[in-house]
Image: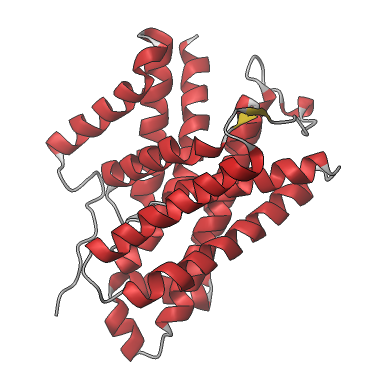
Length: 287
């Protein structure tokens, strides 16, 4: 029983980690909390839902939804954020909240406010390991593959190294010939794609979707980033796993009414010991 709950928690935490990765990468460069990130996950999930209804299979739908949300994320950055980078932090924050409201309300107008069933398009019985449900194994495999690919991209490619340099000091990176606009756009695209993947895995796991799904997920992803150390990629992954485990264990051994409370109690306990997060949060470089 405990092992099954731990696996459920790790699977849920890996989905939170995928969402938190995009969140923390944007903060690492711009020191900006991208509140619409959860709504981008919602957009990707609804894109996949429409593709499923059109007869598209799982893997093409996953790729198309990731590309679509990458484009949406880049468009949001160029339209709503790019001219506010030098502004006080309140301006981009208000812009972000406005974008979040536009996305969620647009989804309600198009798809309706009610929860909709999400079709099961996977045939993964071969992934069953003992008593572990195949969907749990599938979520873990996909999440690990995406995280490893992200690490390889950041460590082994020119663009990935440029992103890492910009996350250390974007002004110094610009002096070294790195185009900050390109780096920021790629960062938003990666975050949007990972959010779509996490949303599709989540909706497949729980077989439902609704327009306001992004709000609670955004809060969990933000909590995961803060817990692990906002701006740090290992911190986002670790924080996501801790939040997921705390939530599932609270539901299993306390009450489903306190699922969110369990996750945030874990956050508070960690911050009492390490106020900057487990891996130490990024601090803005001032000149």
